[in-house]
Picture (tube, rainbow over the protein chains, first blue to last red):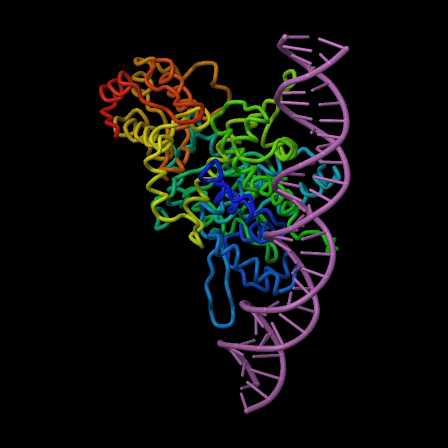
Length: 241
Length: 241
DNA sequence: GCCACGGTTCGGCGCCCGCCGAACCGTCCC
DNA sequence: GGGACGGTTCGGCGGGCGCCGAACCGTGGC
């Protein structure tokens, strides 16, 4: 029974919320949805390797818990993360989970290397911005060139803002809202921060629109196109592996 | 069996890590440790309302998972959160859990009011900085007075830095390290940000040292002393309820 | 030396939860 | 209208896990 009141008032909600991500199936679903797109229920079921009915239950649970939102169209049920803050939470938690937990790690040492070499580790989207070595490299380059200052938290410098506008990255677009202009997001493959927030989103959109990157297959992985590699080298001095 | 490999490589660690907080007992332990102090195992057991053996198991699990660190002294086992970033993660997650999860909420409406009136909601420590209405009030006041800028992420302004030094808050103390100078931390009672990072820590230390606040009992709750109320009003125009 | 006490280990109990298969419902296409 | 298909509901199974009590271990005090 143990119906005695919990000593901390918020322990119950915290546990219930954390429980949403405490299952491998639900965790895999949330990670898949980090690409920011809306997936159908059966896509997710197939992707994480469970039968449709199981996925249906877990998806309902995630929606009820507020992590996911759903949109029904005809006989399809589209699912996506509830918002950018939710995505940041999941990504941050995943990064934390990968950096800590030194216990009986089920990672056979060279799995790490194979992950590092994968296309996703090289360049991918993280919700609506760029991640992987590409994302981290861009973040480093922008800090090195003074576009973004890293003194006391991240900030876009005034000359940096002009420089960004000059190459076609507009920070005053419709996406503004109350989102922070630039935010740091911990990269779970590189374990170092890349850029999120309005700037991260605008950069990613620009890279897509300008043809610098294009998606590989249906996942989050990206390929840097030859013109993209040229532009990144010319503008940021970036050389990718 | 279902031994098929998970589609997402990091789903397993994420689930395991989230699972650490997915239990009410473990969650309550972590929330209690948010005060930044080291507790003994039996203190925690009594506080969260489980028997010593149960607490021992859960504590070992939290330590193995990297959320807590332990320090053994004689026949005592002291436990604290692994670090400020861990504390931020727990606090952020708790705030998120309280804001989302609109489901069958077990909160009987006026519980919220009773929480609001509690001493903890008025003023408390959050790991090593100030929280509650006092914490967010200070944050608002510092932003309003230009000590902290909130344009593109939080930052301490140059005049703000001088002003802080003038009242005895030193930001270049030994605590610097690689911590951000000022960071936003979501307050789970107010659901609005208060100040963390080096500034938050220094402010809290100064408030204690100057006798502005003093702990109530053994918890995280704080009482604002008469001289403290005077100083906060004089320096920041802050009037507390 | 003895005893008190904090902490741990172990066995066992009971519940919860994630999984599946089967049946069912609604939508879309032909 | 009929059939294909995405999605849901339900029953049942199995495993994992959180809890406790009891026994045990090591430290510290007397």
